[in-house]
Image (cartoon, rainbow, N blue to C red; front, top):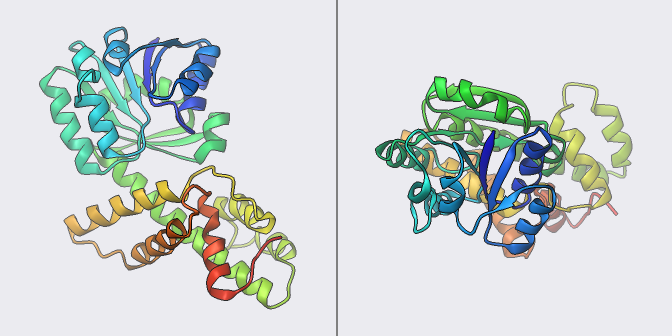
Length: 294
């Protein structure tokens, strides 16, 4: 299939490359030339705007940082709706506010464009190896039509309900992930202050009830003090802000989410916003005076 792909950042680049590996023909656009060069070297064709990319394809994917970026890419000057034909499908794989997805879907429908929201979980490592978890919202028939494309980038693609349900699911995911990372950082700070080897504790508890994908992925990073971003603190702050806004709109209290967001805001203020979210260990180092890792 010929696919337009808008947004070639940390996640978008490997996702686009996996589509190429699966045999799809890509027309891509990004504001950063180095990102375009990286993906065109892998076999994609570059477009000069989102509109130009959309004009050439029956399916467009967006992978952008937040709601305003997606709105600009879809609704703005030289945006997707300027180039898309009636019947075009838009898959927004960005993590944005559910209400923004619903607003965009209405604008798309007015132009005869079908849209689903399909955010992802797994960070850069799973984007690279094509094993992202994809959660989708929108028309079920459209989801079933594009599911094979989604599975070229992920190991699972689950339909979660009407438009916006994908992003609501992603917000739930980000709450669970953020709280888990904080729990790992808190527990391993205790371990280090008590004089026990964090690596031995990791090996001891990973097979029990405390074991999790988060523990396996993030504890070794904390132990090595390796905070190279797979998913940046600043992006997690954005997701938790969207979670809190959504929760306030439906009357669902999120006291723990609010706490984790403030911890991450502290890291941002200290200059660590571009670190991996495992850098929550830095917050505990700051308040405890003890580093988990080297």
